Length: 332
Image (cartoon, rainbow, N blue to C red; front, side):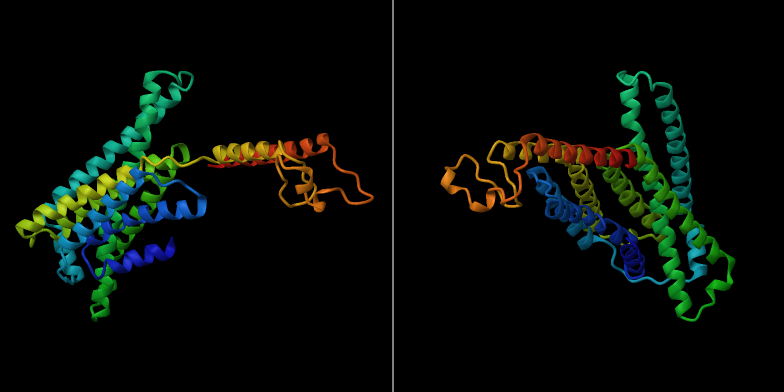
């Protein structure tokens, strides 16, 4: 995680944030295939279609994004903060953050008030809206962290060119704003993940984060002002395709720990129907007596375990695993 964050931060020094941020959507594709390889998750046709959309969207964004090389000093960055476009953007973002925050507080209070009416339509509606608000707030704040991170990397580049940027208090204000935005993003994403499913939270966060990072780069750095007519059409199209792909991956249903445990219990129950196994080797199910290896017979001087003992040991193993699952569910 730390290495990826450092790499993203460094990449902002070489390209526009409207290019760097959408390409980060490829992490969801990587997560899906790692989950399939390591955790045995099933990849459906919908997953493959969503993955292709994400890749297509990233290709369009990369092909038609602003690739001009720009360098800014602290003075030029402060001038950009005074542009009417950025002021309007800042007002909209600040107002949106306030509205979403108030919405989160309201929905949480209503959910607590309706905790004894979990089957009511109002409770279910609020329980569906609350994670969307938390993810949206995290995405809105996180998008500003990209803007301030881009400003910070430009300050570092200007300092490397010999300008004494760290002698100006504005440098430290930008650094503080970046840190506040990063911790705000992490906090509200964690708040949502504590009570709601990541399958809903992460894609909504990713979509809001990408869209408003692009809008922020356009409003502050003017990354769209040199766009041709073709770029004006194809770049937004790529972003829309990318967002649709991310939402498509959000429909992937992962198996819970309880489901995996039940599947393991079913396999063990099926195996118990066959010949009892006294060693670690697999038993022969429904085979002739001659097909059973001598290693499956009890050793001399030792008594074969009774069915009561083997059943009790299986019960203890299942009980301990279920207790682990319950503790995991309580933790998450």
